[in-house]
Length: 432
Image (tube, rainbow, N blue to C red; front, side, top):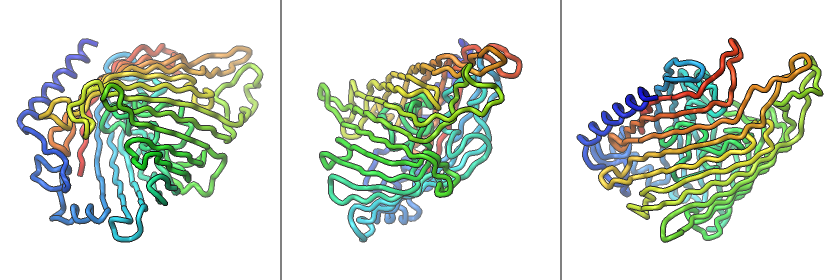
């Protein structure tokens, strides 16, 4: 443990020494792609002026690559260091800016990953490397997780439909959210795991309601999603069950400081194969199907000190709570809490850091062996701390440490007990 802390401290000191040489970072402007290589928002800049012109017409392209080197330095299942990466290309079109009709927004996303992660080395149920899960975990994958269209009919309501990437628009949080590429690495701090019955990419449609006509103040969504979607398929050939979901978020101003409150719920009518095999099963018998699953979740973030209220910079608290049926996703109850900061230092406006703790109460599946049962999971907990340092606005370096009390009790091969693990990592993200 001491060795892990020393390594992270050395990495962090190296990061700060580089950042100090770069100097102050340029704030966002009406033309964020402009500027020299040290101040513009992306590595490739404005493409000789065309990128800013396209942005003015409502056409934007966001391209990034995230690379992570991570290893279990103590405990866990394996001490091997793993390297992996993920590339993401997202295109957006605003029909009104393009001179067509008002209120239309088209989104398309192409995503791919390569190499490996430590997710199978920790013994944890919740992955220590969120980024490597998308578009599909394991191996090398390229897929189109999002091809969707949104149309607003007034300032207060609209509809959306298509192949939906469900992660980034659900369970959002100012300090703990995303795909593991800009804030926390661990999935537990990026989304509430009780809601993982929802596919990452699936066919769906829904309604958006803006009670105040301002999406930054309040937004309510209701959606119907296919329960069997995958990023690598269209989803039309295997529609088995539906998920009905609703979520509402509200911007608050407690004590004169910015915060957000979010609550959501979902129900699935898909028949699931139970992960729990009790004594009433014969070992050779096919596992029975159970209809339906449900989950409710809540999260909040609250600034305690703000350096820039308009740009949501400062330091604050965050937390999540969730409850589910515990089947097929075995996380029955979940909570997390922590401290996060964005642009806390005026000269380091793009830096972020976070410290968090999570706890998952597991609906422990059991396997039947002869006339007895074996429990192979336990409740899981974890701690994570990271610092995301912007060397330039488009080059972000993030050292990270995690300590995980994994859900898996023993290794399945040699029956060795899996101890609390310490995971070190370094992440490099480039915005093109």
